[in-house]
Image (cartoon, rainbow, N blue to C red; front, side, top):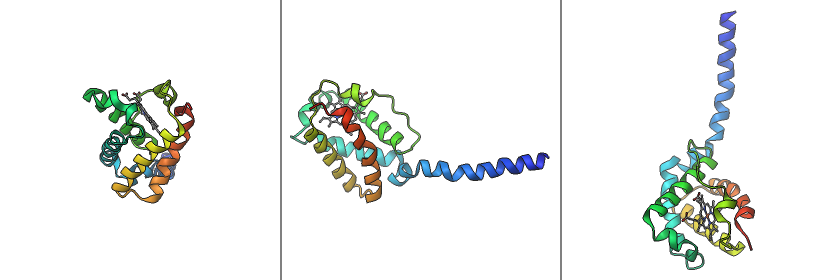
Length: 145
Ligand code: HEM
């Protein structure tokens, strides 16, 4: 009897293991937290240099502690969304961007900067689409005009 219980437990493990692997497939394919941090660093640099939208980030860029926290939040958010072991502890997207008056064009400009950063690190097309597929639906909570 005990033998069968063990066998059943083992069979369950075999069934679950591939599932949990699939859940963090995007995180692993992106290269884990280190690679995500490199992309976020580059991305934030691009946003800061992007005259279309950098006015939104004046206060953030001018305060190193605030900038570091913003970057950490972005890394955690992307890491968690990709199925990684991080936990995003920042505000929800609606609260975080409330009252900023972000337009659809502003949103698209920021996504272009993210795509440029992903391209720089030669992130695979499929991974890029998967990540944008997670971030895209946030547009409705971020854009106000
Ligand atoms: C998919 C698109 C976006 C994502 C995933 C995103 C993500 C975030 C996150 C995680 C935070 C930090 C929230 C917190 O402090 O708790 C944040 C803050 C902020 N976001 Fe966004 N955002 C997006 C689009 C935009 C756009 C389009 C703009 C403006 C053009 C923008 C401007 C800002 C600003 C100014 C802050 C405050 C930064 C600070 O704390 O100093 N975001 N965003």
